[in-house]
Image 1 (cartoon, rainbow, N blue to C red):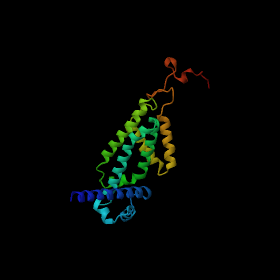
Image 2: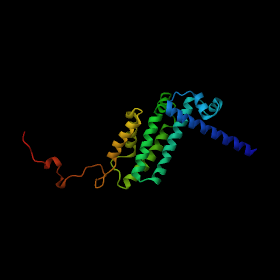
Image 3: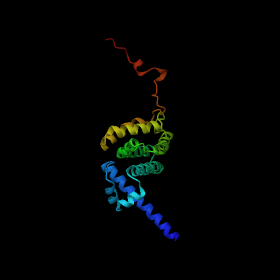
Image 4: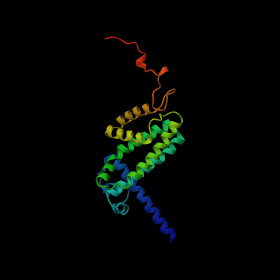
Length: 211
């Protein structure tokens, strides 16, 4: 009897995951208005199974956002284990921007319906992941210390909005941000440019030219 109950729970968990994966793919490819029947069909399950796990579109959208954000947050440690901190930060930031671009319509839908009850939880998880990556890059002197995780997340969000669905534009803007964030050899990382000896600016050393 207990084995039967465990099997039922296992099957239910697997079915829920199949629906989530199909929904994430279709939301990413076609937007938030994909019919739920098509999501059920793409998962290989019936509509009754989908509605058994999710009360409606808002509930499914909420679950997809939470699952994708959790996966993104968890990837920070893996990236740091595989790459140098600056490369790990760049890869994760690119993934974050793709996430924001792909699922922005989902977040807008939940906000419009006043249904995004885990927004702060997702934001905190992503902030911790960003802080872990950025802190590692700053600790090795590869990233300027004048920026924090919250500011970097705001930049990532701005890129996702400005790119307007164009992966090429998002990549170009990400490169611009990362080029400004990462310190070059011999540069200070505190955010202030090094002054010439004597504290004078470069302009003060240039010969004055009369009009």
